[in-house]
Amino acid sequence: MDPSDYSSNEEVDERLALYDAVNDTELRQLCLRVGLRPHPDTNREELIRILLDEVTHSTNPIDEWRNGLIAFIKKYWTRMKPQLTCPAKDLESKNPEPCYGCSDIRVLACVVEQPRHKQTIGDLKKK
Image 1 (cartoon, rainbow, N blue to C red):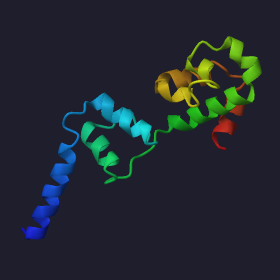
Image 2 (cartoon, helix red, strand yellow; image 1 turned 90 degrees about the vertical axis):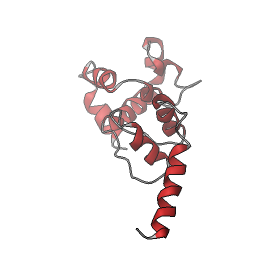
Image 3 (cartoon, rainbow, N blue to C red; image 1 turned 30 degrees about the horizontal axis):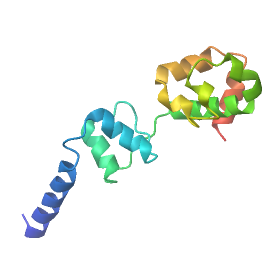
């Protein structure tokens, strides 16, 4: 092994060690805080590598539906606000991306439960 390879591996180990005291939930929260949205199945090592910008993470395909729902809620806010019981009720005041706090299944349920509006939500997710 070339000595320069050894020092770079040692450097990587040191960078990985920075996250030893951080649990998996905190790693996921760090990713979200810096604008990264890793797939829920992403393991600990991959989360760390994403944070270290060593790998490109794949995006969660459900995020497009989250964006569509958020855009739909914003578009029809005055009509929807009194009906909302989920985190989206705080859309204007506290949480500009409320659907990102919901599970993938909850997001899909929101879309499926609104069959009349599914096409509109789908159109908005593309924007």
